[in-house]
Image 1: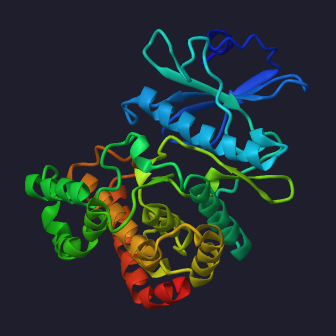
Image 2: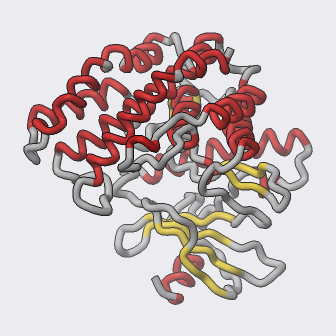
Length: 361
């Protein structure tokens, strides 16, 4: 990336604005993101290249994002919110009305306002942060509770479809491309034994027991923006917003913040369940979501946590069996370490499952 390219892209969005400086921004591993700093009276901008190898339908993804942000924006306007552009992402359309441009190399670029006075948190380190994260994602779902998930496309088809993930796992085992099945067989067998239970979540969605909602699908705390006083501003990183279950969002959050160790911790003895963070997140989440969640959704929230860890375990393990072709690895055997760590976290979660259900009530 160079200055000429930056100005060319801004121009193609119809943005002839003065630029003070620009720099790579954030810690994302999928998209390329740049902060465009402008003079004081002009809003700073975020220019982002969407990874079309991961998101194969960028126009459809942007349609999702525009529907979601527009839905939230209308509610904020109706409520008299004074700082709407700090409470919901503001994407800028190109002159042709589309919310992306395609460069000469075939890359897709989007442009949106930087949320002024905002900051993110990379990791939950306190009960208060866990509560805020739960409240933020619960509020996000409440804002979208009347936007049917069926109106959106799947930006990553079958992303949390347990039956589809199980099929991919079985294929990895059957093909044994990297000749690693033998060493992992005890774990493979146990994960297969759990498959009947875990794929029920997709059955509940298919039969309508659980409603199909508009969900975020990447509910880490670093996708929550806070203001200078630590108050919640808005949810960001909307690329994976698509049809899904409330259980996905609740469970994915606990998959990360409920673990006392990183998802690739090699020392399995360090992996535990952070009951205090779990309870705090659930409290914040239910404060916002209790009014719209169905009884079936609420009663299965704790199950959603177990499901999301099981799903991630078989995804890591499938990639290890396939020869490490999907996830980026930092060293040989990294996916094996990830698989074993997630498997252990699933065991720890099972040990705490009764308490998890009691917290939900």
